[in-house]
Length: 406
Image 1: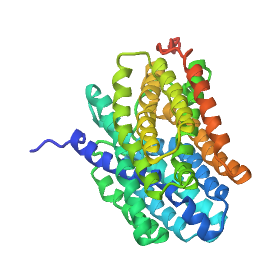
Image 2: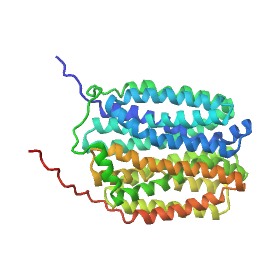
Image 3: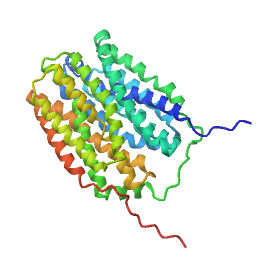
Image 4: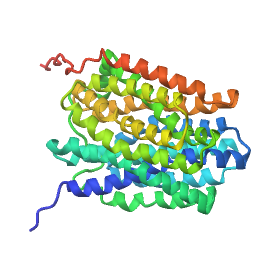
C-alpha cells in the first residue's frame, strides 16, 4: 500500500508560493500609477487617494497577525482563497467607487485584508512547516525575491493596461488576475495539517509577546522597521506623480518602479548572504544610511530619465533588503516558536510607517504643492534608523526555566 505523503514538496511550495506572492505584491506595487488618473477623474485631492492607501497599509499590518494565526490553525489554502476573493472585490471597488468613503473601504480595508492573507506571512508559514531546516532560509529568500520579481513584471504590465484599456478596465483585469491565486493555493494544501492542530510551546503567546516588548533590542528593531515602511511606500506610491510633476513621461515612472523590483531581487539575496557572515545590526544600519545618501544625491543632481533609472536601480538593491536581517535577528534573539507572531508585530510597525509615508506625502503635497518636505523627512529618518540599529544585541535571550510542578 503506498505511503501517504505528510508534507508538500519543496518545488511545489516554491512554484505556487512564489507565483502567489508575485501576483499579490506585483499588483500592489503598481497602485501609484493610478494616483493621477483616479484623482483627476473623480476630482479628488491626492490626500484622498493617499489616505486610502495609508489605510490599506495599516489594515495589512493589523490583519497580518491574525492571518498568520489562522493559516497556522486551518492551513494556508483557506486563507489564500479568502484573500484572493477580497483582493478581487477590493480592486473592483477601487475601479467603481464614487465617494471617498467607499474608496477608502474597498481600496483601503478590503485590499489591506487581502494582502495580509496572500503575502509573506502565510507563505512563510507553509515553508516553515514543510521545508527542512537546512533549506528553509534559501526557500524564504526565493519567496521574498518573488515579490520583487512581481514588481518588475507587473508594474509595466499595469502601465500598459492603463494606457490600452483605461484606468477602470485595467483594474477589472487585475481583479481577474487576482483570482488566479485561488487555483495556485490548491497546491499549498497541507495533508498533515488539521483544523485545531497546534505545536507545543514552552511559552504562551502572551508571555512571548510580553518578553519581546520588554526587550530593548526588539523595540529598536520595530523602530527601524517603521522607517523602512515610511521610505519605501512613500517612494512606491508618490514617485510616479513626482516624476510627472517634473515633466517626465509616465513610462519613466513605470520603468522606475520595475527597476526597483528587479534590483531588489539581487539586494534581498545579498542581504541574506551577508546576514550569515556579518552582524545583522551593522547590515541594517548600512542599508538605512545608504538609503538617505541615495535620496539626497537624487534630489541634488539634475533630474532626467537616466538619473531616475540609476536612483531606482540603487534604491532597488536597498528596497526590501531589510527583511532578511530583521526577521533573522528576531529568530536569533527569541527562537522560532513564536517567530510568525513576533515578526507580525515588527511588520505592524513597518506598516505604521507605511501609513505615515503615503498619507503624509499626499497631505503635504496638497498643502505645499511639493513633495520636498517628505523627501527631507525620509532622509532624516534613514539617518536616525541607522543609529537606532547599532545598539541592538543579537545574542539569544536568556530565559529562566519555569519551576516544575510538584
